[in-house]
Image 1 (cartoon, one colour):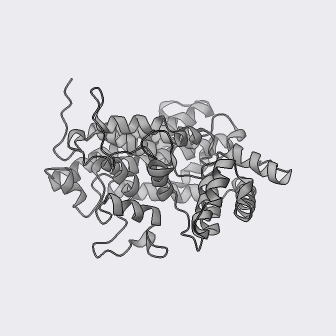
Image 2: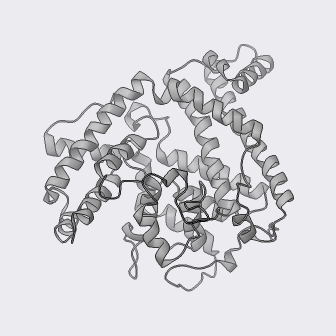
Image 3: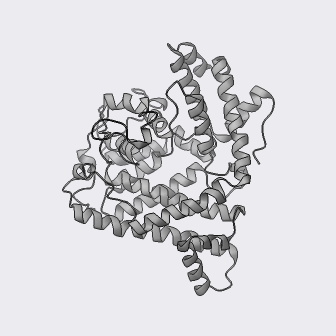
Amino acid sequence: MTIQRAPYAAVSAQSRGRLLAEPGSPTRSEFQRDRDRIIHSTAFRRLAHKSQVFVPHEGDHYRTRLTHTIEVAQIARALARALALDDDLAEAVALAHDLGHTPFGHTGEDVLDAAMQGFGGFDHNAQALRIVTKLERRYAGHDGLNLTWETLEGLVKHNGPLLRPDGAPTARYAKAGVPAAILEYDALMPLELATWSSAEAQAAAVADDIAYNAHDIDDGLRAGLFDVEDLREVDFLRDILDEIHALHPGLERVRVIHEITRRVITRLIEDVIVESGAQLAALAPSDAAQVRAAGRIVVGFSPAMAGVDKALKAFLFPHMYRHPRVMKVRGEAAGVVEVLFARFSADPALMPQEWADAAAGAETDARRMRLVCDYIAGMTDRYAVSEHRRLTGDAPTLR
C-alpha cells in the first residue's frame, strides 16, 4: 500500500545519508533501518532497568525509561501518521531520545553534571549522541550505529535549536555552552544547530511531554503520592473527573485512574493534531527544509493546551517530583552515583578491564574523566547499586 505523505515530510529515499556510506536495504527504508538499529542496541535494552521516577523494585507496574520510551514512540507515530509525516523517522527519534539517561533518572544526571564541571559537564542529550555515534560497539566497520543525518538531527535538536542565528548558544546552553560531543560531531557532519528540527522530530518531542504528563499522573496515583480528588487543583483534570463520574458513577478507583490517563493522552494528542495541522497549513512548506527554516515550532500544543501542559507540570512538581518519599530515594541514589564517581575517578583500575585499560591510555585528565562518566552513565539502577556494594560492602535500600 502506498502511503501518501505531505510535501514537507522527511523522505527516506532523499536522506542526507550516513557519516559512513552504506549500501541500501532492499526491504527497509533508511529510517526503518535506524529504528531497528536503535531497538537492537545495548543502550536501548538497558532502559528497562533505568528509573523514570520510581526505582524498579518499588513496583512492577511503574514506568521505567524503557516503558516510557515505548509510550513516547507510540504517540509520536500516531501524531506523524495523522499529520502525513514519516512515522518511521518520528519513531526512531522517539526511541533514541532517552538513550543518554543515567541510572536513577535526572538524579544521576545532576550528580554526573556536578562531578564533570571543569571537564565539560554532563548532558543526557549529548550522551545519547555519544552512544549512537561512538559508544555502541556492534559493527565490524565502525563504532556507534551510523544512523542517518535526519535521525541524528532529530535526536540533537528535537527540543529546538542549540545555536542562535548569530552562532551564540541558545538560552538552554548560554551558561555552559553547547556540549563538546555535539560540536565535535557537528564538525564531522553538520547538523544545522541554528535551525529547528524536522516536523517528525518535533512530533517526538511533544509526544515526550504527552507521555510523561499522563503516566506520571498514573504512577503518582497508584503510588499514593496524591489522591484522585487532588487532581481537581488543575481545571483540565477537574473537568475530566466530572466527566468520568457523570458517565460512570461509582466506578472503582483503579478504573477511574485508567480513564483519567487515557482521556489526558487523547485530548493532548488531538489538540496537537489540530493545532499542528493549522500551523503547517498556514506555513505551507513545500519541503522539510522549509519546516527547519520556519524559525518556530510547527508541531506542538495550541496556546490553550500549552497552558494546560504548564499547569500539569506545576501540579506534578510538588506532588510527585518533590514528594518526601521520592526525595528520600533521590538522596540515596545520588549518594550511590557520587561514591561510584569518586572511587572510579581516583582509581580507574577499579572499573572492568576494558574500561580500565582505556582510562590508563587516556591522554588527558578530561579524557579519563569522560571515560569514567561514560561507564557510570551506562549503568542500570541495579548495576549501579551492585557496583556500590562491591566497592563499599554496603548498598542503600532505595525505599
